[in-house]
Amino acid sequence: MEEALMAASREGNVDALYDLIQQAPVNAARREALNAARRDLNAASREGNVDALYKLIEKEPEILDSVNKVQVVHTPLHEAAKAGQTKFAIELTALMPSFAKKLNPQGLSPLHLAVMSEAHELAEERAGKNKTAMALIKLDAELVRVKGREMMTPLHYAVRENNLELLAEFLCACPKSISDLTNEHQSAVHIAVQERKFDAFKVLLGWLSRRNKEEVLRFKDSDGNTALHIAVATEQFEVVRELSSKVKINSLNSEGLTAWDIANAKRSVISGNIKKFLKNRGGRPADSLPRKELLHEFLKLKQGPFEKPIGYLIYVDKEMSLEMRSFILVVAVLIVTATFQAALQPPGAFWQGDGDTSQKVSTFNRSNNSAKFGLHNFRKQQHNMTRVVGQVVMSPRNFRAFMGGNTVAFVSATVLILLVLPARSYIYSLHLSLLFLTYTYLTAVDIIAGRTLLTMSFIIVAWLFIGGVLTLRFYMHIAKSIFNDALWLPWLYVLATNIFYHIPPNPVGNSLSHFGNRLMMHRKVSSLETEVID
Image 1 (tube, helix red, strand yellow):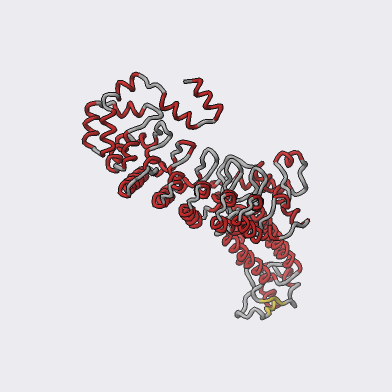
Image 2 (cartoon, rainbow, N blue to C red):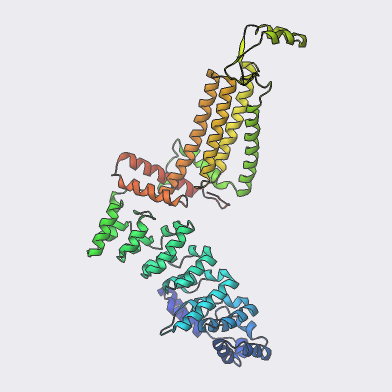
């Protein structure tokens, strides 16, 4: 037995592995517990006879426990699921929940068997098995993610069987299952395209679009192929048409080939049409694409002048946990609120009038009245001065000191909020709101101080600082989405990529690609095992 197992391991023969599991000798305890009642139990499972189940349990109380102790075993729940006996399956799952995740000697769970079709299966039988499958996932949605033979989940089998009803139910019951991969790193989308299950592919595509999870379409298998590569290789023009607007059209597989290269290697009429279609969408041969720097090459080079600050920003962004983001946002919002209110109500308030902002207020009479408060010497210099209604009362020197510090605090807190907010499409509306808030703050400063050189300097410096930070952050995420297959703004990622590849190769494009690739390397090197909101 050991020699046969070693031989199967050397050959990578999965079928031989499961054959050996079925032939493995059973221990005496299991034989003693199961031999007397196993045949009757399996019969009761196929028939869905709940009464017979409990009679067997009464006769052999340890029968279910003895089955449960075996790691790989064909349980009664397998039989019930295979036969579409829904009530019996629910009853048995309630008695022994662990049965639902057990693999039989063929490497299949009960839910796998409920999904799989048999030869000459009747419509009534198929409907019963579907009902059983849906009943099982209502009890435990995570059953959709149980990995069986070749690490295939029931979701993968639903795609392979083109069972659209179960496929839709599985996706809605357990959305995380869409990210599960087989032992060849194939997603459900890979399997749908490879098996030519176009209806299942359309269901997957519709669900991914509605859930904004189209990054799954860009997953690569163990050979580096995306679903687009497979669609081109299998000459499925409709699938290529659907994927071309949703994935990176010039992604390279492990052989260094693009989808256009694969189509070009074939000589059929369909491949010729696919090649023309890809070319119109920006498809290129691999040798015409800018060369990407490999990770080991990147690590050997010295850091450029802009790499340290960019790397620091990436590191801080990745290191920041959700709790830390919340704490920073609370403090920054308090600072923005306080400084904005201070700009609207500065110390000493404003010169008052009847509401006409063009009206001049004389300070001559006020200086005599203020003499009794010991301010005669200060006001004496203002006898012949006039002030505009709505401007600050404080002297220019005091205003510079107060408003300078207040503006620095406001701008710093605003920039911190811009950096801490997650870079999502819907979050950028908050970025826009902060820009308008900054505009109103600086406009208020301009009004209450008058348009002086100092005021204009405040405004220009503040806008340059905020605009520079926001531009850098936005550009970093754009570059990341184009060159690093980022899970961010999928529509913008596809649009920018397609536009980029429509442009003929040029030095500017090559430089942009080089920078984006180095940005990707920075993110990879600085990746941390912390909670990240990107």
